[in-house]
Amino acid sequence: MDPNKPYAYLVEKERMANGKVEDVATIFLTNKECPFRCLMCDLWKNTTDRTVSLGAIPQQIELALEQLPTTQHIKLYNSGNFFDPKAIPPKDYEAIAQQLKGFSTVLVENHPALVNRKVVDFRDKLKADIQVAMGLETVHPAVLPKLNKQMTLADFADAVNFLIKHDISSRSFILLRPPFLSEAEGVEWCKKSIDFSFDAGVECCAVIPTRSGNGALEQLAKEGYFHSPHIRSLEEVLDYGISLKKGRVFADLWDLEQFSQCDICFEDRKLRMHHMNLQQIFGPKISCSCT
Image (cartoon, rainbow, N blue to C red):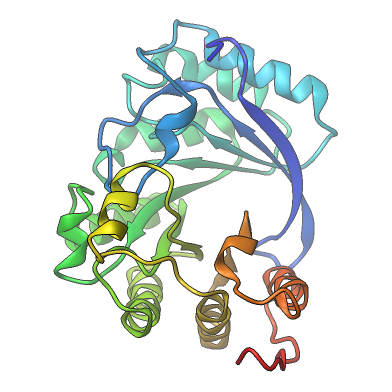
């Protein structure tokens, strides 16, 4: 990986907290591997072996912004935690904030254990709304410890509460059917994880179907402890989350085809969830012989 270049960047539409559907720029920063190394994570694929040098992250952002169209919203994903000093040098925060002037909202990802005063100070430098995305993964009491997340549900709730006290919103990443759960259990505990997130004060939930690809999940699959979720389960969970009307709920549709066993209804299901992501209302149910 070239530490002076982001490994990807793009613009996609997203429904904002105010109800408008707007373009959002996303920059995937080349950065050091996350130290937490959660069981299901595959973000190590595009990382460096050591902390990038001072000035590298601002340079990556500048390069991407020169190529991207103008938007009011931006996400910075760095394969780990934005406020980990071993990932992004704190001395770069000022330069990053200067580059992001003019954006209305800025989203960064971070582990709950690293939510502290640095988040507030960075927000103050930005002079923009900031949202912190954190991986809750699951509230299942036996599965969460096995994921090597190195946090408790209380840790997550405390991080959300800290952000709320400082007028900072949060987004929860939730796994659909992590290892050690059946399909029905995966749906049940995903719904419970959405409930927990909103009860804790999270503004937005993003449901991610658990994907293989990091070696550990392949090994668990061989042993019968992991199976990929079905696309219909993702639909069901999205329906449930939106029905709560407690905040935005998105289904992650990246590489969605791997979760479908039916070529006849796949595109219709994908399109339905895409519209639901943007409109946050129910679309017509898909009828197919596969169900």
